[in-house]
Image 1 (cartoon, rainbow, N blue to C red):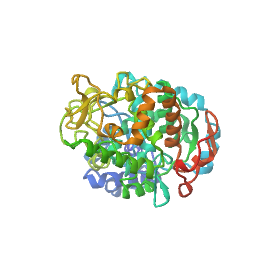
Image 2: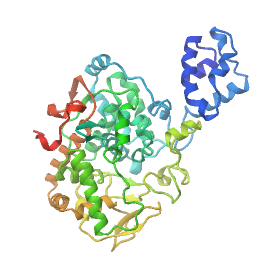
Image 3: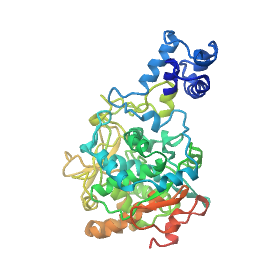
Image 4: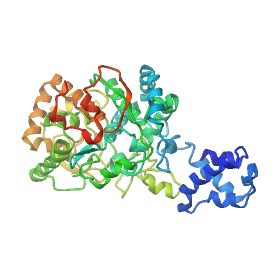
Length: 460
């Protein structure tokens, strides 16, 4: 997009224009916008190959480029198109150049920049509670949660940073995460090739969790980025074992014991069988993730989150422009659930587990989704999903809900272990990998085809 502007301004040569033609032609021709190739075809070589800025069609292109490059209103964060590229391609550095750059990466400086970003709220996407921590945790969780073992082969994980590309960028679990990546883009650009997208996404989530009190002893850098979403196609073909399930029961008015037992079986199939976690780790991850943040369901409209990236780009529009009011802040729609999980959604504690033993009732929230509220205090904005309630209908999971409600130390230890496994497994790792704490067990870094289940080995 920037190249096309330089072309219009007569500041690039024909070889550079050819790059712009290829890139923009790929994006815009299917949407009925200007074909850059057609504009250049009638021009002469060299700098004259760029059409005159006064031409109507070039003016149209210029307007579209500016509209898609600069944030000027809520929901339009500068950097979306660099961090969620319309071409679904972004050339990754070679493994050798990445390894060299990684050796020079200042981990402490990256940490400080992420910490500053957490409370530096941008009007394009205001931070809930003035803190992007829960947002970045969700981003990391859904990026890494694609990890699964299918037919003896491990797939997914946040290694590769493929959440930026099709098909992952369009998945339900990643709605509005284009803004999270855009908010982190200045940090990515500052550190260049030494900070991969896979590392930045997972480290931002880890720094966020730590800043709110959650224990994570060690984080390792060295995830090698991919240039496209090819390695995510296995997840797309096996949707039941790839993406994180976030709304399985949200559209179901019937969530009695039988349905919740079935949901628990689904959790066990996905997280124990295919992702390799044990009961303790599954409960720690679900409860830990739901200790932070809130649900967003500002109105009851079909596809109220707006156009998915592939749909938006085909029309030359911004992705995920919500249909509820301004589409941001209190008008945000993501999953349809409404409310926070705990009283203090930016503080690490075990309230989530303690409150599970109160009486909850099912109701249809303002986002059109069925969720659970406290029966004795329906005005209380806290809620639970069907997946949360399912933990109470499985003996193996219920055991750990009880333990974590009584023993904060047990919860801390389980979370640290489970979160580290979640964000580390999957993908390819650089020979120059390094950690901000102790080096993690080598089995966590095994390549896809050699990956083991968590229950096969000890974390120690």
